[in-house]
Image (tube, rainbow over all chains, first blue to last red; front, side):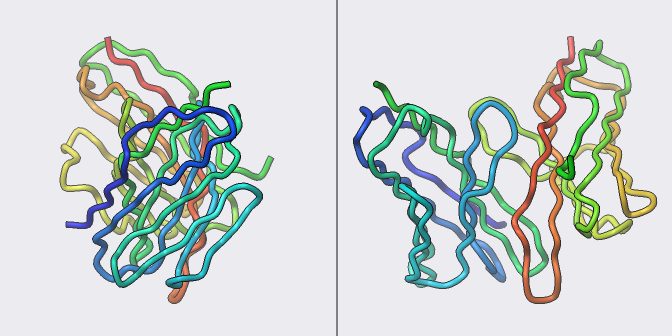
Length: 110
Length: 116
């Protein structure tokens, strides 16, 4: 059975800190790893990673995939209170099925 | 608005009643997914469709749950004889999937079900 595990489950940081979120996966016929941000409602897409070792960046957020060790990390630098959210990762397989982890709740305090 | 839309946004029902939710995906997307999410958990897979064909239904899903996508466009999720444990956010998502690629899932805002 496919499995995606995120750590930590939650963390509290001060504005300006750097945050690193972890995602490990076991997905049969793995195709890609995705990160989402969820505030009050629907998850919104951040990154999709298909190749090992290639960092994707968007502003203060960046992510990288290691297909040998089966994990990904999401970094947020210079955190702001607007970064407070649940961050979800999902592994997808060649049949197009998406398996989500439980998420990491990030709270950024002023 | 060309995003995924779900209706209703909220549903309160009494235990034992049937409920039906609707999802309209992004029009050019061929895949449609239903997920369930409870507090402190990530989205849990329920079922998904390619066009009108249901590809898989979660083994964890009881026979009280059924979903359809009759013309390959909108989808409905029905829960019969609701139980309090069915209280959750029901999320619909769509994507464009081909032989060699999966586009990211695009989610609707969900239907929050409360069973009293």
